Image 1 (cartoon, rainbow, N blue to C red):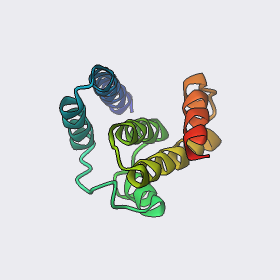
Image 2 (image 1 turned 45 degrees about the vertical axis):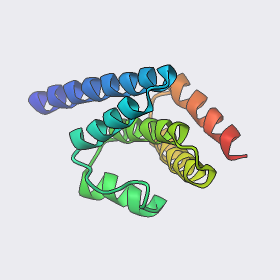
Image 3 (image 1 turned 180 degrees about the horizontal axis):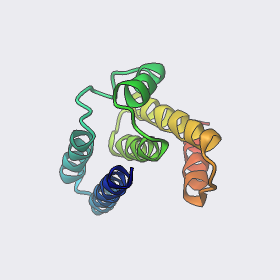
Length: 131
């Protein structure tokens, strides 16, 4: 169990680092590099499905059942979906990505035993986008 926990912690730290790179590239306006990091993020989790084309229920099924991701992983996926939404110009695609992100974060928030201010801030930001 200890080895598995160490592996998961290393993986979460690596994914968090990728998310930081995505944020940094997006803020610099380097959309191409941000999109490459997003692809790398999904590749790290072995998610080869196009998450944009999946419905919310299908996405949750993929993440929870097929990939057996923890809530921590799902929360990171939600953060990446939000960043993907920030990168697209098409309002419909953006709204779809924000809805998926919001749904996943809500699910994690309901099931989590720990409070996360960052999660609450992301939820509030997404709610504002969606309204």
